[in-house]
Image (tube, rainbow, N blue to C red; front, side):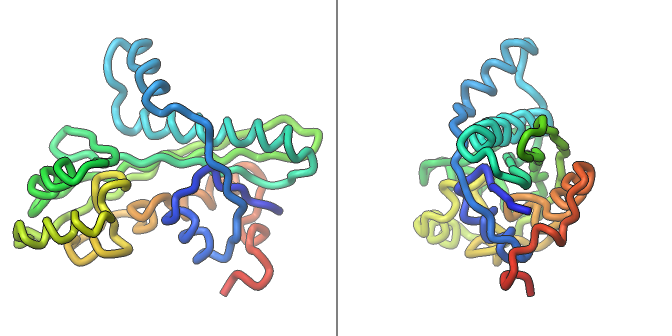
Length: 218
């Protein structure tokens, strides 16, 4: 049973590897801003974060699954797509991209608690079969230390780590020292919820342990 990760996220790849799975990876060809804007136009307003992360996760997984079914007709396994956003005080944050924005967010986040929303789409791909999908959103609350000073924020931002991750923080690398509490599946905060992926795979008739790569599982 094969696994294709519809992402080039190092964090999501690491999670699967730690879980005993060595997936192939394929970057989805999805304009996330355009997908979000189209959905907002249809709705007549911005989508709630849980709906938006699920919409984007489904778009990514669907793009890769369709390409995989065409390019590799013998592919037998699952395609995993995900998307994450951080919500703090009613505001939704994706990736900050710039040092200035990352710094501003960290000044707001210290001493506060926010929610990381992570959308998941798992698509079953098999030769000669119709694509089937299972989806879910996982949430985890994250509390940041209240004694983080401006010098620490500046040093963390200068590391470059927070610029390209949802919410401008990580829990499994340099940012972990500034986080005092996580409520929910910890892997959700890293990039995707492994327990959620396992449940969705089961809904599609896939046994999690069949996804383990020989020699990879511990």
